[in-house]
Image 1 (cartoon, rainbow, N blue to C red):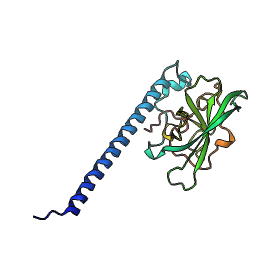
Image 2: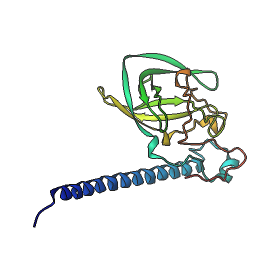
Image 3: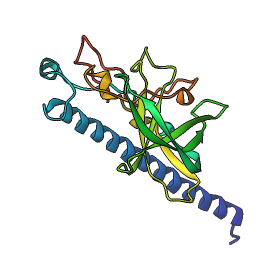
Image 4: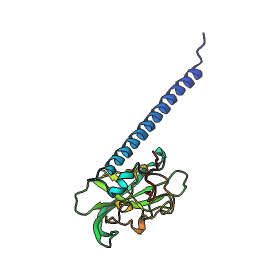
Length: 215
């Protein structure tokens, strides 16, 4: 009996391809489940007086923060440029004061469905107490679907010679100023104003209706 080696190779490739697809599918599902769990945990903190920026009246009617649907496409591997000697700058705060940050580096990335790449400057608190990078930004959803003052991202501090950085816009979140004017929050700088829409992460907080669900 002749063995059709081309057929065997083709079947082998199909099996390998099937395992790769299965692995990707399971990983994406686990990622989305973990993201939804994080969002539920944040809802829980917003119900607790000690942790919540909401007033007692708002907490009484609070059900859930609102989010775009989770999408693994918005978890991006960005090209990382670490600045050799980070400049110390002051970011304006929403109450007119300022805070010192290090202009630590820059991340370049391409969003789903976009041809041209985008860039965001990465900041680190100048007091050296933070272990994560701070990424304040605005985009074209602000004032419509998302908070008008912009949103924030946190990113793990990479190793010294790292050339990539994960930016997960599904985890973009509102500053506490979005819920309560008594908080002081850093204002995203001009260099982090994106000319595109980021349809991921947290949406604006509904002032009149606190019963909206989006998981």
